[in-house]
Amino acid sequence: MQPVLVVTGGSRGIGAAIARLGGVRGYAVCVHCRGRLDAASDVVSSIRADGGKAIAVQADVGDSDAVAHLFERVDNELGVVTALVNNAGIVGGKARVDEAEPARLRSVFTTNVYGSFYASREAIRRMSTMHGGKGGAIVNVSSMASVLGGLERTVHYAASKGAVDAMTIGLAREVAREGIRVNTIRPGIVHTDIHLPKGGDAFIASVTASGVIPIGRVGQPTEVAEAALWLLSDAAAYVTGAILNVSGGR
Ligand code: NAP
Image (cartoon, rainbow, N blue to C red; front, side, top):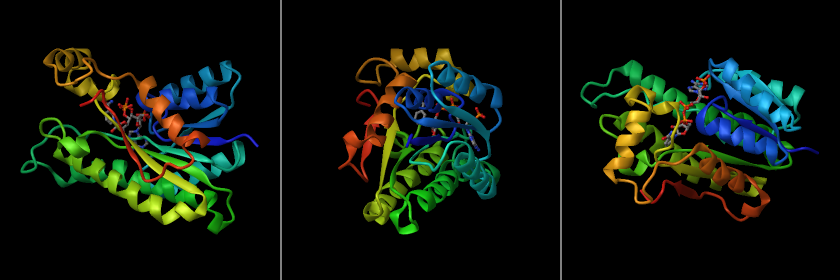
């Protein structure tokens, strides 16, 4: 049976790199997106061009009904999910805590935290041996912000990723005897569209020049993808509840 991988936010950046590498490693891949179905379809096309199997599915991860529908499409079009990467995430712009509006906090926590819970819930219902499943693996995508407190005026983002770290540890224990492993990757600064509001390439250049990254450069999405695919693989069969920094030493 072909393994089935769901990558939330697989249309761009880190998620797209994970989806593409998943296709190369033999997974049938659900490339999920929020609004950029064009970008998700491009990722699907590149997986298919390499001989892989993939579909694009649009859903807001913060909407539990939409996430349930996403997994029903995966059931019908690819088969039962065996691997999930909770990658979809937003920064939510910049605001000091004493300026942060409820709507900003709600959208960041709904996407980054609730979204990871909703997708994990659907995956566990299908993977868990307690529910008649055959097991599987989940990788969450957190951020070094959870330990560093975030870049300037992004405490809301850092706190949401702290919740993802805590969820990883607790969930890994909860489902460890049900055939499911749960781990997290903490990327440092990686070259993706998420930095466009801060200036994109100019921001990347200034961070590199500042010397705050010990390895001397920002990361590439493919470098995070390699770590995610390893955590999903049987090579990591004894790894669960782990949090792996992929951050160039920062
Ligand atoms: P990105 O290039 O901005 O891509 C974000 C992805 O998430 C897109 O596929 C987007 O879909 C999807 N998404 C956003 N909100 C969503 C929602 N409500 N429902 C469904 N999908 C949603 O971001 P990235 O840099 O690759 O980041 C990916 C993950 O890595 C995030 O969790 C981020 O916090 C984390 N991370 C990134 C960095 C970094 O430096 N890049 C560092 C640490 C952690 P659309 O394409 O449809 O908009």
